[in-house]
Image (cartoon, rainbow, N blue to C red; front, side, top):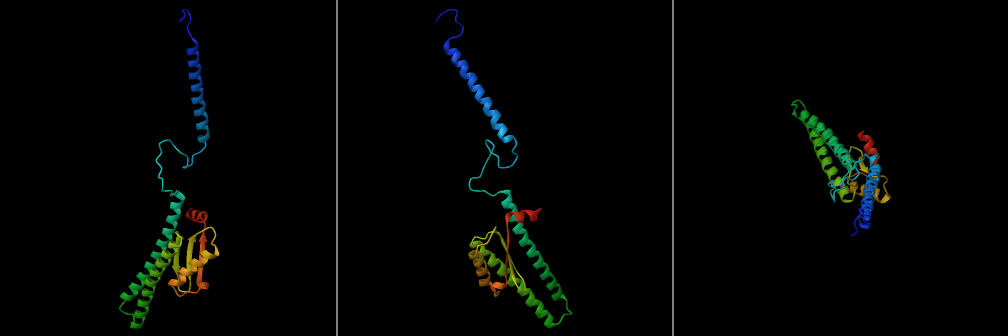
Length: 188
């Protein structure tokens, strides 16, 4: 090595590479934080964030499931209230045998409806209608389902499921479809 040389070619090349590496790191940090700085949604990714592989349940889907569960709960509460009134009437000692028989038949009718509604909902879930509520009334059957648009084959499947469990004709079956946005708006 020659005396008097402070920096050689290798030291200069090494210094240039260190400066280039520093510039690359700085540019990466500047542009990667700038592209995610404006996003505050929950779908942005974080290094080391746990993520379930097969479970893709979003908050929206969870809200929809809760909405349909709440509809079923409200149906059950209304039916339980009606049965409670019947039971109070049956406890009344002043009613006639004929009235008692009518109340017992009405109570049995409610039990039959509950059983048929559950059977129809099970059949519809097996056919791919996962968010569905069936309400059997005195004169008709109402089905509420999550669907953007029902195809005629899907309508036929729903009507077939209802007609296989009840004595209602197709004209007495009412199908109400709700989109995801309808459900989310109803929750507000």
